[in-house]
Image 1 (cartoon, rainbow, N blue to C red):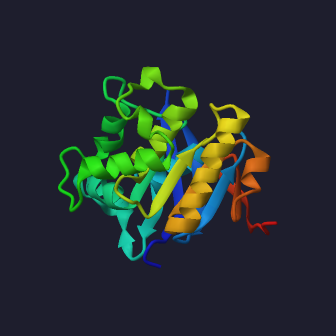
Image 2 (image 1 turned 45 degrees about the horizontal axis):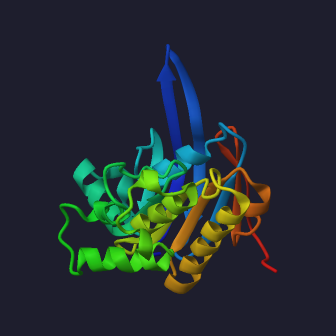
Amino acid sequence: MQDTFICRQLGKSFTGDGIETHALSDINLTLDGGDFISIIGPSGSGKSTLLSLIGTLDRPTSGTLSYGDQAIHQLKSKELSDFRFENVGFIFQQFHLISTLTALENVMAPLFGRKVTYDKKERALSLLEKVGLADKAGSLPSQLSGGQQQRVAVARALVHEPKWLLVDEPTGNLDTETGEIIFSLLRTLNEEKGCGVLFVTHDPALAERADRKIEMRDGLIIEDRRLVRA
């Protein structure tokens, strides 16, 4: 239970031009620590919205979200920031690297202003080595390929050793070979570090390579099943 997300009747609505849109409705879900889970569904099905709520980047308009026995949907902004820092790493489809910072500095960015018990630069350099970019530590994002930028983003997400990695379209902007490298890296981290991975994808073949697949449509979960890996 300690590293488990629990969603109960979770909902998210948006209002624009006087019209209320239900992006998510009555989501009941338990995500166990250390699991490797895919979320699949067409555009507009609520996948990324659910990822944002679980990662506390956005707040639900109804229902509850807990982490273990902690009701995180009730936390204040500073408490949510601390919760994310300690427990969640994000990997975004658009990478979101800071253009004026080097690869090394981008990996260290989540640690700026934080007190930690380890050497920040040493940790960041070891992660760049893990993702095969030790020789690119001094490079700016504009000097890196898309796949290299994604690997910097992976290293950044891992810098404080989170319990969960939340990943939006991990291979969406990458060629097949580079996408396979990124996916294999996520699987390795899951197996070696026990880090939970929750990834959103449009790719049915990729979704089937998880341990568990959640399928969404129109803001609802229509299937949630364990997969048998070959």
